[in-house]
Image (tube, rainbow, N blue to C red; front, side):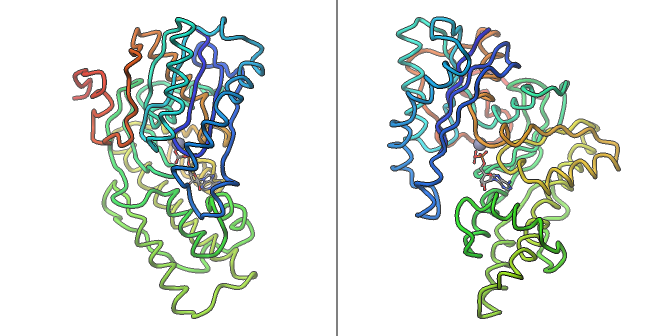
Length: 347
Ligand code: KG4
Ligand code: ZN
């Protein structure tokens, strides 16, 4: 089945064409970073307007790159949440319009489940069940994944997401927005144990990153002056290590406790080079198989939405044209099934 995926939950307008839920025919992402960076974060109203400008050209580009037309598209998958409601509605409205005009079945999907599905777009053959760490700008959650749409939360952040910790840390250091990539680059030249940052909630599978940000702020205030150019790589490396360390440790602990030795890492922060390195190193030492999509499929994209959508559409789970966006999708176990009123698959 040839599926057109559409994603507009935050500050990336994206469209992709995926065949059989696995084969990427095109993957177009229009980033709004330049517009938002001057404000130090995403401005929701501006994001919605930029999505409106970009959405049609991005979809046309995705069709063009895949060398198909709308007549070839057999299904449409669109992100309906969680995310910024104004942004989500742009992608959803366009998806509905195309579905209605072309008589094409369409389905709304959960963005976080989409991130998990990104692993099926790679060469890797990952079998269910597996443990997945979804680590992005808004979420940091460990799931036990028994199937598509069959996820149970094993641990999640109690405050900031890991991506937020990167972004807020970078802001405190005057490194600009978004901070994850900048810290990743800078840290490559730094000493990871130059500063000792706290690792919170050691005995739990839940995360807490707000103390880390406060520790950095306290450190800056105590010094009374900004870090020097020479010191910044060391601070970035130490700060990044504190985030990567707990992500790896808790995810592998969750997998071990579930007696599952396959681990998937996805979401924007999974693009982090040190996090990837630490996961692969620890997995090798401890007998886990770790699967991480290439960075371009970790950050927000529509291919992952199409991959999941293809599975749902094939299972007959299409949506009606009165489908609404769900800005805040509760991350409690089984919540993924609320929308379609299904009972839980989980024991
Ligand atoms: O999944 P994503 O693209 O959007 C959300 O769903 O939130 O994740 C964005 C987050 C941002 O916080 C960004 O700073 C972070 O992913 N990120 C990174 C890297 N690339 C993106 N964090 C650390 N290292 C990176 N290389
Ligand atoms: Zn995301």
